[in-house]
Image (cartoon, rainbow, N blue to C red):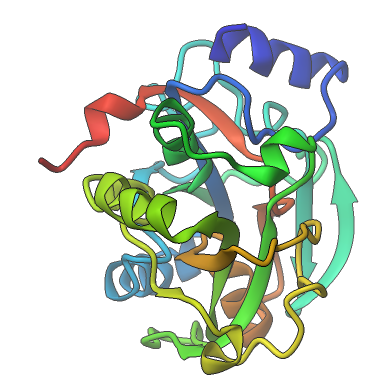
Length: 257
């Protein structure tokens, strides 16, 4: 299935699930959509926190069809699930944004770690959440973001359990792709980054960690959702964690070296 075919299934309502493991060679994107009045502050927040918020594209006010991301793409309907935040509170989850869309809305597309998973799988590194058709486990941490305007809070990370030799190889591979979060920010003891219970993710699904494995943590594009809670803006829209926009951008084109 091509990214366009997947987006068409999403738009028709035929696809309503996490996108990990789909359209492997193509980049997936987190979304933050907010009024133009707050776009400059969020752009600064993204620039100051590039590990968690690497930008793939930024739209013009009211623009819902960002050509850089894909052909026949409609931001308002081509993501399998959206969160709507009002005054920092998650008030609604929906499958389309036509009723809340405004002409001053600005789209930020942020790189996603699902994008580098294809390279990890090709290298023979097993990913349990993909094998089990689960959403990746995501955790709030004690790693402080660099604030900008009303946006602050702490980093969110995604976790994948790996054998030590695979973790080393994963670091080598993902280091080449800063546009989709790059190298891990931590591995090993989760308590060192403020995670009390590795079997109780804040977002996504828990996966078992075997005795010969260690948890490996990457900065996650759900970080803005914690910053949005902190900012308490009247209206912000995001993707639902794990339910990404699948783009036409080849992951191979994002390699930094």
